[in-house]
Structures are given as C-alpha cells and as structure tokens.
Image (cartoon, rainbow, N blue to C red; front, side, top):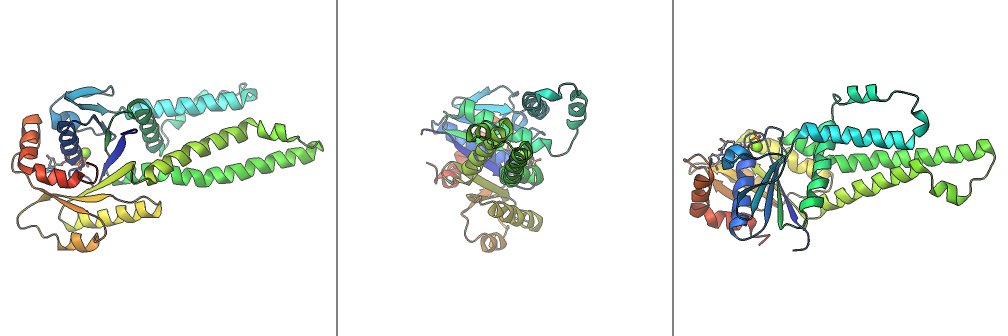
Length: 305
Ligand SMILES: Nc1ncnc2c1ncn2[C@@H]1O[C@H](COP(=O)(O)OP(=O)(O)OP(=O)(O)O)[C@@H](O)[C@H]1O
Ligand SMILES: [Mg+2]
C-alpha cells in the first residue's frame, strides 16, 4: 500500500466506537498490517480498553499496533499560534496593536475543537501516512460531524473571501488610478494566503470523499435512539458528499431484532457484532473475542483485505 487507509469509527455516545476501533485495529495488526490507532475523543478510552498507558506520543500496544491519544488542548493552542503567526506575518504593519490579548480570549471561543482535530489529522497523515491503516476513534456525533463538515464549510467562506479580496484589489487599483500590473496581483500576500487555505481544505475534502482512502464505520446498537441518531449521521455525511462505508451493529443479542436497521440502511453493508458477556477490556479479553468472532471481523474488514 502506498498511503495509509483512514478508518473512522463514528456513532452515538456509548455505542461501542472505541471498542470497535480497538478490535478492528488488533485484528488488522494480527494479520500483519502496520496499524496506528488514534483517539480523537478528548475523553480517551484506548488506554483503558488495552490496559496500556497511552499518551500523545505513539506507544506500542502489541506487535504492528501503536496507539496515540491526542492532547486536544495542545492542538488548540497550536492552531491559535499558527493563526497568530499568520496575522503577524501578513499584517506586519499592525504590530503597534497588541494582538496577544485577543488570542488569550480566543482560546475560549467555541468551535476550536474541530480546527484542532483537523490539525491533528493532517499531522498524523504526514507522520504516519506510510503505515497501512490509521484508525480514528472519534468523539460522539456532534464534534465528529463538525470535523467532517469543516473543510466543506471553510471552502464556502473562502470563496467569499477570495471574491472580497479581488474586489479590494480592484478598488485599490481604481482609487490609486494606477493600473496594477498582473505581477502585483499575483503577489498579493493575502490573496496568496487565501488560495493556500483553499488548496489545503480542498485536499482534505478530497481525502474524506475518496472511498478508497477513507472509510467511515458507523457503529450503532439495536435500539431506536441509536438508529435515529445514526440515520441523521448518514444524512449529514451524505450532504457533504461523504459515504458511510458500513454499519457495525454492535452489542447484538440473540433476541435483538435487526429489521429496522436492515430496512433503514438497505444500501449500506451491515456487520453484526455480538454482545460480549465478558467485558471487552484488556488484551486477553479482546484477543479471546477476536478468536471467537474472527469471521465477523473478517466480514467487517473484507472490503479492505
Ligand atoms: N460488543 C460488545 N459487547 C459488550 N459490551 C460492549 C460491546 N461493545 C462495547 N461494549 C461496552 O460498551 C461500553 C461503551 O463502549 P465504548 O466505550 O467502546 O463506546 P463509545 O461509543 O466509544 O463511547 P463514547 O461515546 O463514550 O466514546 C463499554 O463498557 C464497552 O466495554
Ligand atoms: Mg469512545
């Protein structure tokens, strides 16, 4: 494989995203693939599931499998630092103003989490893109969807910014009555920056929309609330041109009915994952579960293997 395949585990709180991500990762590692499991949920669980102490630096879980639990606060600060550097660079004439105090307030502003997660995703891709699989344990629905929506939304306002900047350049041209030569327009620092952001977000959007490079596993439980939320997730992803690769119907019990799930998601492959009486905690229990249900995992991953 040239570039790692990204596998995301999405779903309502508590349905078993982290457990499914852990089981799938372990299974792929046992098959000999090089795998990194990344917890993007600030309320991390992978350390507890594997009973291994993980941190924001990649740590070995078993042969072929590494784990990382990202430090969201660090990445939020990193994002703000990047923005501040950009502003200072682009508007160097504004250094008389003290921008620092605005950034101290900004770190509390809503919506920064998804920017931080996008930065993490780019960083992970850059540093670990040579592995076979990058497995992302996602936060519950709201933040998970904001993460996937960010590139599409950003591209919409970037188009507006581009138009605005071009308009400003035109007006500046008129006011000074000096026709700007093409070269000056091309080297407009702000226009260049906006175009760079556009390329960046378009690249992310392309990755998320590419079914070869990105797989979204939607984990749900056989109950009405979980089904209702999953329906909304599939629709929200569909709106931004992202396809859900498969549904993992987790915690299936003998008497669980799957009729509603099968009818609702008739066009998405559905894999069943049984309820485990033994807690799915610790390597021994996870490995035992895989031994007993290896065929199901094979089915969950057969589109990749
Ligand atoms: N197939 C299963 N059988 C039995 N218990 C399971 C199964 N899958 C997950 N669980 C249990 O369900 C609980 C929630 O699982 P998990 O933490 O993986 O869910 P989550 O979707 O990641 O939750 P959160 O939204 O809080 O991140 C845990 O106690 C886990 O051990
Ligand atoms: Mg979780």
